[in-house]
Image 1 (cartoon, rainbow, N blue to C red):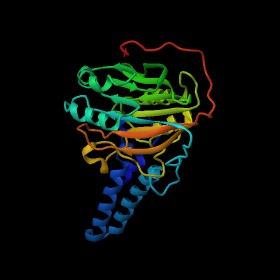
Image 2: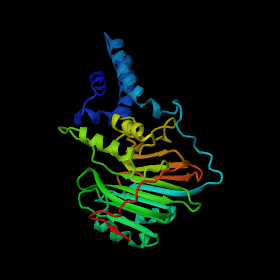
Image 3: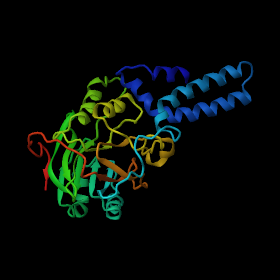
Image 4: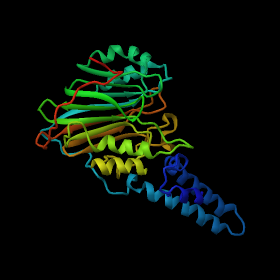
Amino acid sequence: MLALALVSLWPTNRGIVRMLDFVREPAIYLAALLGVLAALFAGRGKWIAVGLFAASAVINLARMWPYTALASTQVPLPDEVSGMSCAEVLSFNVLQSNEDYARTASLIERTRPDILLLMETNGDWLRALEPQLARYGYRLARPLENTYGMIFATNLEVERARMVANTSSNTPTLYATLRMGDGARFELVGLHPRPPRPGENTQQRDANIARAGAKTPDGIGNVLAIGDFNDVPWSRTTERFREEGNFLDPRAGRGSFASFPADYAWLGWPLDQIMVKDGVKVKRLEIGEDVGSDHLPLMARVCVDPMAPDSDMPERAGGGPGTTER
C-alpha cells in the first residue's frame, strides 16, 4: 500500500498510474483498518507494519486534503447573492444502459432545473424524456450510442450554444452563452471526457480537458463548468483545469461530494464536478438521491452578479455537426 501511494505521486501520463487518484479515499480507510489489525494481532515488527500503513494513509490524505472538512474553503456557501438572478442546475449522468427512464423524468419534474445537462444519452433517452424536454425554451442534443451522448436544455435566454469534440472524437463538450433575467451574462461549459485507462497515455486527454475551461468561446469572465469529468477533483488533470481557467471549487473545504458509484457513494468518488469563476456565485450545492443510474445527480443553485464585467469576442456560429437544436 505504501508503494502504491508513492507511485501515485509520480508525475506521469500513464493511465494505470493516473487511476490511483481514484482510490485515495478508500485506500485511507483500508490502511486505517489494516493498521489497527496489525497493532492488535501482528507479532514481531507490528509497529513497522503500523507505520507503513500510516505513511500510505498520510500520503493519500495529503493529496485529498483540500477536499476535507478541515481544509480552507474556496467559495462561500451559501454565497452572498442579494439582488442577483439565480438558476437551478441539474447535472446528471443517466447511464446509457439504464432503462428506468421514469425515475430520471420524475427527478426533472421535481427539481424543475433552469439549466439541465444530461450525459450518456442516446436516442432512446432523448425520446423517453421528450415530455420533460418539451417544456424548455431551448434544447440542444447530441445523442450517441457510445455512452458519450449529451442533452442540454434551459429556460434562460441563450445567445449561442454548441457542442464540439474538443476532448476526443465523438465526445462532445458543451459551450453556451446564457443570460439571466436581469441581463447578467455567463458562459456554461459542460464536460464528459473519457476516463484514464490502463495502457493509455493521458497527455492529450489532460491537455484537452484543461483547454476546455481555459478559453471559452465568448471570453466572458463569468463561467460555470459542470459535468461528469471522469476524474476526481484532487487529480493533476482537474487541478490543471482549475488553474488554467482560474476556476474555484465550492466543494473545497467541505468534503468530496462523492457521486459514483451510486450504491456506494460513501466509499466512492466525486466524478461529477462543478466549478465557478468571477461573478458566478453558489447559493446551494447538493448530491441528489439514487434514481437508477450508477451516478448520483449533482444539483445546485447558482447566481450571477450583474455588475461583474464581461468581455465579448467576435460572434461565432451555433450548433455543430451531429447536434439537434430546438
